[in-house]
Image 1 (cartoon, rainbow, N blue to C red):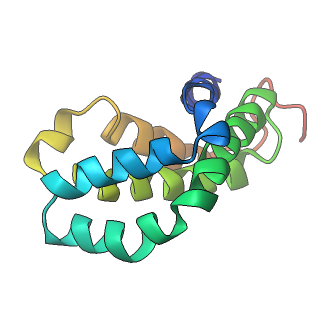
Image 2: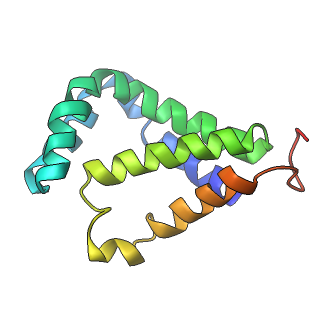
Length: 130
């Protein structure tokens, strides 16, 4: 449930992206200027060209995944897709391959919890689906 709340509020924090996709583009360009070659390649090749679509998909995906985890519906699928989404953000932000990532509160705890749910998130106590 905690990961569901976390993802839900991460999605709510990005709700402005629905109206103004340029906010994501600005964030990506800021990360690009600070990033190492892998992050810059990822931003230039994947993130920036897809920014108009991603600006709408990312908040929606976070809201849907968070809701699914909160309600206990398709927990394994929602958690697995959320892992991919989190990894994408961490690669773009160029934080995932840094030593400091190991104690980043948005890093290992989030990925670990989502991975655990994607592997064993079946028949949880408060799930609506069994």
